[in-house]
Length: 435
Image: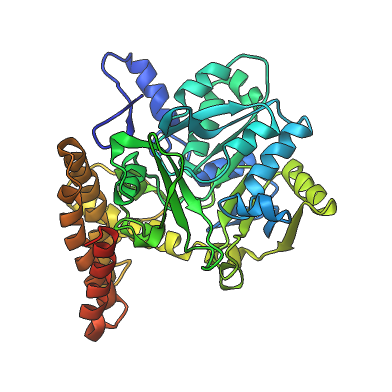
């Protein structure tokens, strides 16, 4: 696995034995040779009720840590790092495989933690390309047990790998899923840093989510440190040209074929509680979908010792917390599949059927524009990075954002105000560049 021109890991397959390629195809989360999420759910959680949106579910909660320090220092409600620490402290697992910070490197990579202190050091969201290849090879056959943390496609892939390798299946005891809007290439952090005045080659580190007590939980900041500087540069994420997740900036093409929101093959899935009753609290709240008794017992034990606050949540509320994600991965997916098939392209078989009429004509235009923006961001930023000129990326991205605002306004039925909205979006982009 190596990072390609667009800041995404790519598999190098030259000279690989055909038998190995067939095995790889069985564990690729986007391959027709692999089990889909419904098949895995029936295999993994046969006794649990299932829902087409969140998958199998034993319990659904909203919750957060009670410690103000721990809560403010987390991306959301802080429950992911708490459950990982409790899995280690209780002896359920010997270690945790999760994304961490690389010493002296602004990029991120999978690492192994064997103590709650190590887990705590690497908490918070890290929006970057990563690979599990090296860390899984490192732990395989070492006689220890692990929890593994990942976005839905990573968790599914590792479940499939474990089916192929019984010794690995015995080692991987708990799968912890993170609800994902889409993956980001390494370009995302570099772009945010550049907009804060730190070119990619001078970036020391980045914190993608810094909570601000003056704003809602979804309106956070980011902080970057330039090499040689001691103080971070803090900037509002929404002011960045590519700060909105809806633009799909730096999204790999594979994400356009994902229909798994709540990491359906994980033992527990954590998300941000993007719901009206929680968003106003800047400190953040988690949605938790539990599928494993051990995880539920640890959460309830943490509640009894007053380490966390939990309250029951309905499946409908959990799904509503990811409403935009569902539009992108269900309705949008149907359109994208139909588009690609119409152009004679090979597409995976998904649980969503190809359907160009899944969305209105105007909403379909928005779906297609978002896909164009993802491709544009990767190509233009690669060129900007090579030339050392951010404007090579920013200028075409501004135009694309303006068109996105126009199309989205029309899709929402507020076409008379589309020009106002478009100019507002353009002003945001210009402010992000200090223009």
